[in-house]
Length: 294
Image (tube, rainbow, N blue to C red; front, side):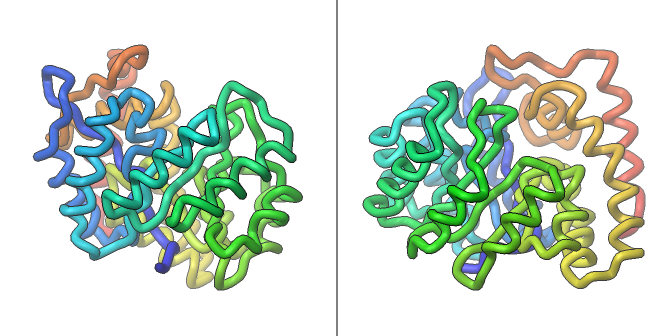
């Protein structure tokens, strides 16, 4: 398994009735692979995992794994606020054909660092699936510290971390832990180029849903150390990164995908459709990026 480069945190398309749009999901996956995406995440936070029923989770993962057909790694979001439930979801992801599990830190319950170590160790011991740690304290209220990651990284079933804290010092501390057996992945589009140039293995990206070819080009340039090319591509993409942060993810993303014919613009409640004042800005950005050559 090679978790590196341009990895897409896939949105979950819904139809006009709010049901899974599996046709749009398959088309989204095909466009990602055609655009050079090197891995996908199904049912992560961008995929509105916590708005899915158990049956919908199973259906989405099953169809996604079938659509990918082994061409790139498939990570499945299985993290929750309770260790036993997270373990069960991770074992189910294994049965459905996932390559690895993306396990976000437990949200709301505010575990200690010792609790986080015990949580991830228990899952890695018993899930039967490679585990990617996922730290996004802005969403969870829980911050997996580098010292705890250092304790977890030697576990043979813990293969990477997705780090969404953009602080350069935090990234540097994690990069000191990377090896052939433990990868460091950025989870923050605006600072992704900087992390890749510093030595990160790849990026799990939201914007990649909309511009897979451009995002792959950015990752390739940065990983090869082509700084001028990286800076130019990053400058072209930063306005899109900014626009995707105008409202909570995946609200702007779902609207952008609807413009591209990939599902409804409306996420599931309590998320609502992108506010009208932001729509033309995002439409214009997508039009300009699609017209521009890589």
